[in-house]
Image 1 (cartoon, rainbow, N blue to C red):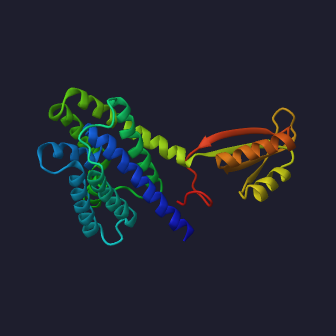
Image 2 (cartoon, one colour):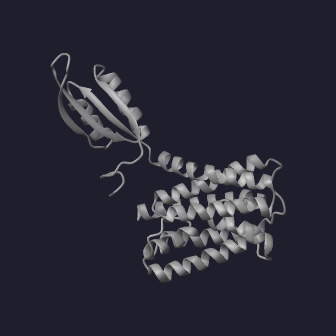
Image 3 (cartoon, helix red, strand yellow):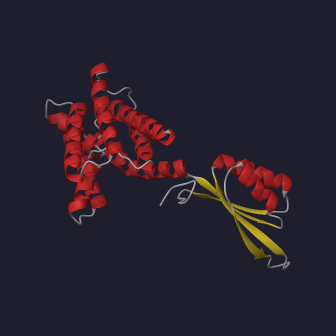
Length: 280
């Protein structure tokens, strides 16, 4: 129950973060990068539909198609995020209609148009969900074809972005192209940051006090490896453990005070699979 409630809060918060970035910064500036919402900006230019309403209709249709083709087990998390994002965008449009950008600083607004949706997407991807849209198309194509989905979606994003040069103006097109380039890198960096842990190699003569601290105070596990010093020939032990950044500080301070002769190697890692971290 606790894990499900946490996932529900993360789903809700990340989707709302995306909605704020898309509506207040992306739609208002006609930035065209990024799947359905990017295409919605182009559609709004030539049809009576607003970008928010088109996103709502397109996302719901894609959700229904995905549900039919991929079955009832099709991504309940994605369904919730898709509906919440679509409804929130339409609600924003009716509560706070925007006829022009919030500021006269398009570069500043581009940063938020990239940053907020990228953060929201990273949180969703990190818990195994997505906000729907072109992700649904990718899942359907993957089921029935051997198409390189990543390349196909990137090509569609590039086409939507290039259209901004012709539909709007060169400045908007350049900003959209910059947004497309930065978005993928930011999502990857956010995911790494969310999963970042500290990997310890501790070389020492007496592993017991350090392992007791890891097990009892940090409630983590450790592995002890027998070793021998190449210069002295003395018997040594190597303690291997992975901790969160806050736990890493505590262990480092403990070793510094209680085992000053120990040798530490501490490195960042963002992909840990095993008990207490991510499952396979």
